[in-house]
Image (cartoon, rainbow, N blue to C red; front, side, top):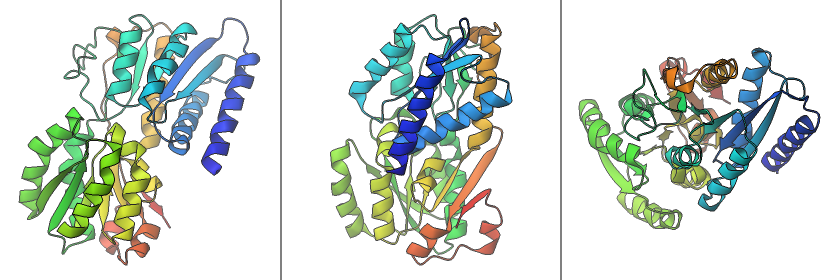
Length: 326
């Protein structure tokens, strides 16, 4: 209820800001594709970062907020709205499927990526990180490279852990690369055995959960993908009910109730996204603005989740946390 109320409040605020918008002010599109609570949190962080740069809704900017909430049939509609409104820039706080729709919908409106876990060069969104060459730039959180660190943190939190189940979306190219190129070697170095559990569609989660109960792993590693993001509550409910320690690839995992996450710093990322928007509004071309990667990372630990599964986080691990939910 709180998430729905917050989303409604933000939407109302956007409409009010649009109605009071002075002529000639910049119009910014903000597109995300997660649940309402997470989407609202991302949007509010972005608005705060813009305010720090002197951009105030109702005075010198209007922000058009759209959230597909993980529903594929709403992506084209939301993107079409922003293109028809002829916004000055579109911030995409969503994964590759949404980015591709936006990219295909416009070759002229600047697009700023908000740091999702993709390689934009491999995806064909930019020519290179140093010189994007088109209308797409921003942040790329190559979080797949952090897979080894996440396994290390999980083992530090639960020293006796041996077998780790990795949940992944089979249609997500980034997750497949993580499974093939990063996690096996990292697991071997840590003395862990990893088993990969494919989840093709939302309807397959229950079958995977039943199989996991029979397999009885010591812990769970949750990758990032559109399918995983919109089903985090189901995953958290399962691992909590099964008393399994776990780590996720995004802060959304802990915010949803998961035990641990390790990812790029959330607030710092949106400050940098806002800087991209600022530079574009001042006349810079996306083609000339290098794509950046995170420089600050964040370990989040949820002590409420730890208590639910009867786990005591070692003091040395807790001391390394950047954010702790108590």
